[in-house]
Length: 424
Image (cartoon, rainbow, N blue to C red):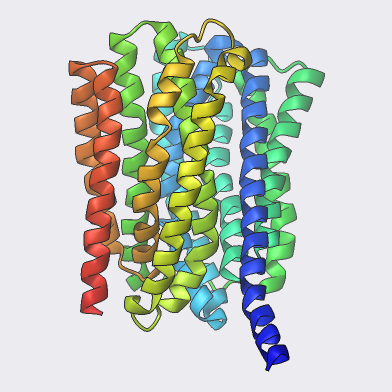
């Protein structure tokens, strides 16, 4: 009996151990990618100068929205359905590639009709249309194709390969920036556009050599998945808009030094959610499988994930609170408000944990109508609230609005999840 009990305990502990190892690898890959991205930006900021770097950041902000539109959210359908049934992979792969090609071409053409006119006004005609075309193709189409690789590996449960694709892409960009700027002294955005385009093409070709082994795509558009994909993509489009409204308002109301400190704090807080995001990244395919015969079957897993997310969120918030006094030494004495503002906003991680898990469960179960209503409502009305609060009481109103928005998201997402579970 004792041996049987011991064997049973060992058997149950294996999935937990595998989950912890997968989580550690996922978190580590996201951390390494974030560090590499920060290094890339630091190199470009020093080499391109304030004018060209500011222009690059603006273009990246615009193309970030277009990247979420490119493909119409088809990658979510691939992860959800392939996790449930590997036999549909080739069709879903072709569905993604077809929509990326069609929407990517349309977005690049739209960008070429708008961006050159805007750049001509802001740089007195000092620009290259060919370089702008390369930037659009790179940051919209090629980025979306490379990000698709990670989702394919996740759908197949190959998390190590997914982590390597994330880290490899981030370090490839950092290495390219170092060579272009530090070795070949690139000093303008237009020369950098060629380097960036070449880097992305090489990474894409290298990645797709391995992806092709999982199955060649069957080029077909699955019409009934387009609506779900649109709902999924819209959440990130509105989220990107909401994430910029506070910076825009504060830049018109507060001194530049404050805006700089606030932007650094926002970057730290946004990056600190990666622990919870790494967990959800691993759990999404499992939730999709569990909810394939009804969302109620995934509810037990959701409750366990919620407890884990709250623990991660609290630990992350406490870590930022404790180590906040170190930040001025890292970023410079000019940013003297970093400690105060980071300690005010760090606890939003706990509120993020409260709504991120039920939202992921709704998405994994294919309940994108509910998920989109919650997230888009929060981004639209929350963006308006954030702008109004920032305008009326900067910066205290800005901080308060963040907590109100996250609390409303948590309440709405759990009410919706419990309702769908009861109906299941």
